[in-house]
Amino acid sequence: MSDSPILQVQGIEVLYEQAILAVRGVSLQVAKGQIAVLLGANGAGKSSTLKAISNLLRAERGEVMQGRIHYNGRDITHSTADRLVRDGLVQVLEGRHCFAHLTVEENLMTGAFARRISRRQLHDELEQIYTQFPRLELRRKSLAGYTSGGEQQMVAIGRALMAKPQLVLLDEPSMGLAPQIVEEIFTTIGQLNREAGVSFLIAEQNIAVALEYAHYGYVLETGSVVRQGTGAELAALDDLHSFYLGGQPATANAEGVQLPAN
Ligand code: ATP
Image (cartoon, rainbow, N blue to C red; front, side):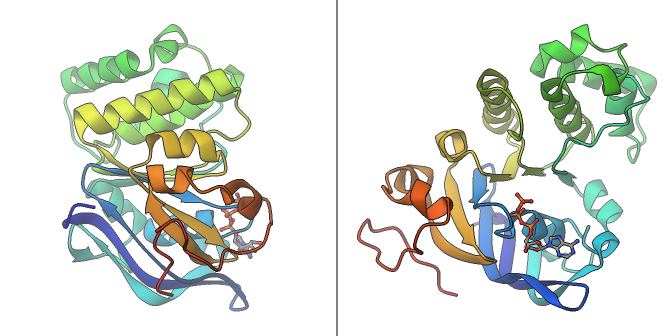
């Protein structure tokens, strides 16, 4: 990995309702200009880790109890979510939250809300989103609530892009979508990464597609990182699928993939 991470998470613990320890000492990093993935089964702690980074835990009565989070070298452990968005760190929540009663285009425009840009610039940036997601151009006047799941996911990602992010946290972008749409979304993510240099941290249960695009990945189990390695190293692990679906935790490191320090 490059030695100048855009994101560095060191030993964080997330506690909900002052009782439920969802994340136990997770450390990870995202190198500038790279795609990192967080893999793990339901309840492994992926969403909680992402929300800890983007400071969205409070609304769910959760908090970061320990550890530090650095973004572009700055300690953001206690930064507000809106400050983070202004600084280019944006999260797309699980479940593709769109404003159902706004059109696709109005949804996209809300993403630029925190930036003071001219109508002309707004128009140009919307056109860029339509180049990246041609389906959205066809649906620009449709109410988001009446578009397909795949289109809503594209709206949610497009809205994040309108904030001109350096780092996007994506929570399960493939959830509930047909394989062809998942491929389309990941192809666009890959392009945004290569061509616009946007870094991504993506939580996914769809291992195959995630590792196809990941430079680096982490496997979470019951709130801890149990494996990490490059996308190719993790893809080569025979036991990853069974491990994921609740198989025995790995104890050996025969494949040369780093086991976690924590
Ligand atoms: P999923 O794919 O199901 O979202 P995940 O890997 O993202 O799984 P989390 O949603 O982070 O996992 O959940 C980790 C643990 O924290 C689980 O045991 C879950 O029940 C618990 N948890 C998550 N959100 C809350 C909350 N708001 N209040 C209490 N416990 C929570």
